[in-house]
Length: 106
Image 1 (tube, rainbow, N blue to C red):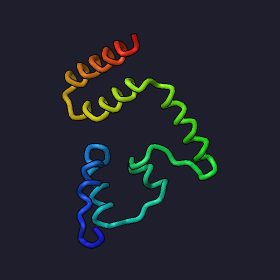
Image 2 (image 1 turned 60 degrees about the horizontal axis):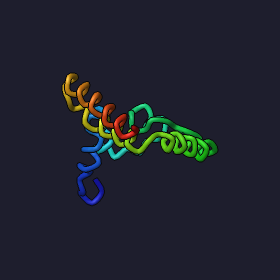
Image 3 (image 1 turned 90 degrees about the vertical axis):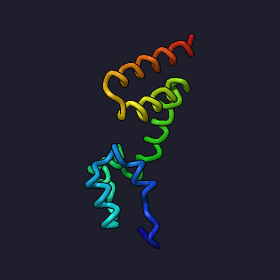
Image 4 (image 1 turned 135 degrees about the vertical axis):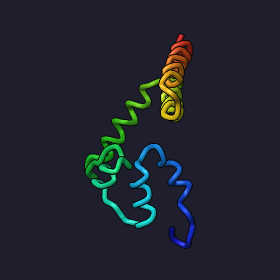
């Protein structure tokens, strides 16, 4: 909260993904955390050493590019919308996205 600028936009991106206690601690304490703690808090998915970073980034990029663009957009849409939906709605959305992605392929 340097210069009294509220970090609410960043906080909004974390709500629902990171426990509110974690968000509150980071914002109010202004604590600097290391990679291992960021992993424990759920802020990052993996921690790698500097030597492995480029190879891992290239491997992940190749994996993502191997998937179709329609499938990637559908997965991102599902991950954005489904967590806020009731189970039946999330299941219906999943079915719709699968059928849309499959119809785009044929």
